[in-house]
Image 1 (cartoon, rainbow, N blue to C red):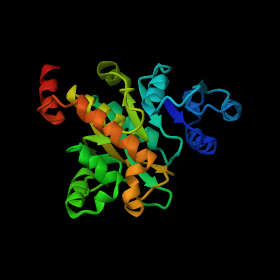
Image 2: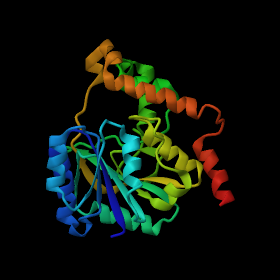
Image 3: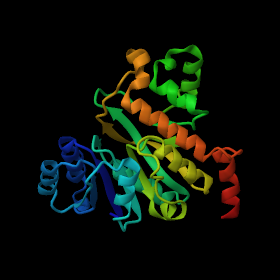
Image 4: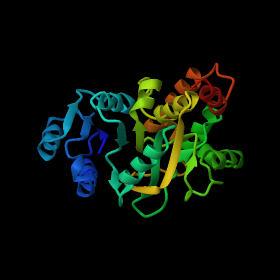
Length: 278
């Protein structure tokens, strides 16, 4: 199987073990194809991971370098045609990897494909989106402002509430928790932007793929379980503004909009010009 799997880990060895074992149970031929980037500066965890997965490439970091840089370290240690990027709280379902690979093989204009993500309670996670209208979209998502009627309307559009999530679709961007990427597209567009410590790096990457004539696909025929801990910004009220993850998210939002501030055309409009030039 012409695939490497990059997992960026941070202080969750039990989830990491569950993730990798769930894949190897269905795809034993992938043994030795994992790259584990460990952002946990913890010697005990490091020894545990290396003992559990001695055949996999293990890259420890002395400090938490962030998700984007961790992903890039992993990708730079792969030689396969395709790379799957996973969070350690992902668990394999059925033949998801095989289905995604088959789709990529048949659609050479696709840079990135992502499966449907299912929470531990069986509900479908929002994992494909339209591009943000402004930094306010981030604030609506992370704080009590999302309760306002005007914000709800914006968030419904952003989260593609009008879309039947049972159908394969070209989408603006997908959640970075689980995605398969074509190495050729990465070589053309570049790695993740490491200025994003966490959040918006997936948005930026998908945007760059579109702007360079590559497609991003939401592929619900493949499913993965995502044991992600959901937090309610609405319940937190005003203090949500002071939540550490909220501050990181908004900071990344500011970086994202500053980076793309001079672009007057939408990514899809730039895409149309890009494919004409290919």
